[in-house]
Amino acid sequence: MSFPINEHLQIEQREDGAVEIELSGRLSYETVEPLRRELERWLKKRRGLQVTVHLDQVEYIDSAGAALLFHIKRLCQRRECETIRGRSNAQVEEALKLFDLDKIPEAPALREKPGNIISSAGQGFLKAAGEFTELSSYIGRVFLALLWSAAHPARFRWREIIYLCQRAGAEALPIVGLLSMLIGLVSAFSSAVQLRQVGANIYIADLIGIGMTREMGPLITAILLTGRSGSAFAAEIGTMKISDEIDALTVMGIDPHLYLALPRIIAVMLVMPLLTLFSDLFGIAGGLLISVTTLDLTPTVFLNELRGAIGLWDVSSGLLKSFVFGILVAGTGCFRGLQTYGGALAVGKSTTSSVVSGIFLIVAADSAFAIVFHYLGLM
Amino acid sequence: MDNIRPAIEVFDLSVSYRETEVLKEVTFQVMPGEIFVVLGESGCGKTTLLRHIIGLREPQGGTVFFAGENFYRMSYKKRERLMQKFGVLFQTGALLGSLTLGDNVALPLVENTRLSKQMIEEIVRLKLSLVGLEDQAHLYPAELSGGMKKRGGLARAMVLDPQILFFDEPSAGLDPVTQVELDELILNINKNMGTTIIVVTHELQSIFKIAQRCIMLDKETKRIIAEGKPEELRETAEHPRVRAFFRREKVK
Image (cartoon, one colour):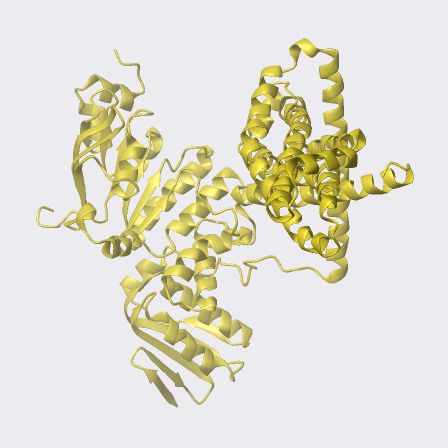
């Protein structure tokens, strides 16, 4: 029985079950796709045949053609058919010489198969445990570096700290100021409507004053610095890691925790309270602006009320928090950077996770502070 | 040979980075199916020349012709289509870190052809087995050694059966055995697929093994100081720097 599928593909099946496939014309990137489809359809229902592939009418064959031949062979194997190389011509032989079709492994996975639920749960657990170990060793090493620099203050890189303070602090001031001002404006504006209804206009000063100094100021600054400096540290150190610069430091006998992480952590720890003060100031200024324009208060009245409303503890508890936030922001940035392994993708991942875990840690620490202050009767 | 149109014709090419001149009036031709080697000391502008031939940077002077067509004068579309017929192996492989080796090799097929997933996988296997990496397809580049990355880069460069293959320092950073294997592979590709191959290197052993013709660039004059078969240049070159290079001597 003969099956002329198309002009480039003829299939003939003899009585005894032997099949002859005859390919002709060009077997190239442009033409193999329809041939593959036809062959797959034809072979689908047939089993246990002896298949001979003739190539003598082929005019041109490239890698896609070779891949088609290999595909036929594998299809046949799956259908328990035997393949035989039939007639061929010199040109085809020459082109196929490059590929050893018999040497190619049967079906190696192009992608790793995902494991079952239990094994991936186990791997997830091991990964989390590994991360915990890494984190503890990182904290320990940074702490040791801190002790070492306390013992050798003359050898610590103070210049680097000044430079980092400028980069993470002074250069962040405009955006911190602007954002705090806007948040002060917005929160004052949305409260103004409610306060006016009950005639409690004057309490806007208490609201903005306490809100900014205790919570909003430190939080805004910390979240901004996570995005601005924490991510920069992660990307910078991560790129150094993948280009072997961290290893180079290590073999020169320089501890990367001392050389890279500690100055960054100290710098951010120092500038964070300062920026928070500015944030408080600009936030309250925003509140003042709204009070004067929409609540008929004079600046003097507002400031008088503010002086009575916020005490030293309100401001200093905010600064204490911001100090801790600073350590968390720079610490996670450097930790994620040092954790980087792989290529460009890994740097992106480290940067992302430095921001995500940085913000998470800030909010978690903020909640912890709230609870502690509450039980110590400091609220 | 005279009536065959050259595959690549570099004409009067001059390149400078800011004030520093790197190449001056470089002119040469590469014939179809030839293995052509660009050689010279480190820092003489070999890689720069390559980057200008494949169109990554436009030269300050002169131009490049592919099969008689001016590369820097053709439309963007046409240039893009032409570039699909090139394969380039970069110095460190330049595999994309976010994709597995298999997906890296499949990338040109997925983006530039209409082949089905089954065919693409077959071609990827075929090409990877050609460079001996068929079992590493599921690994990410970060998990491969330097030599494997290079071979993976070669599999990707060859995946569309390019008419012209460019190699930037193919043997740099490879052990001698892998170097020889790569040289054999270059010869095989050239012989069996008729690919025109341009290699930038300063590895003498591989130059003598693969080069059919070569040019030597000079660091001081920024021009070509020698052109011809490497064996002939070794025996007959007059220029002291060319002699020194081929005989591994100090320049007198």
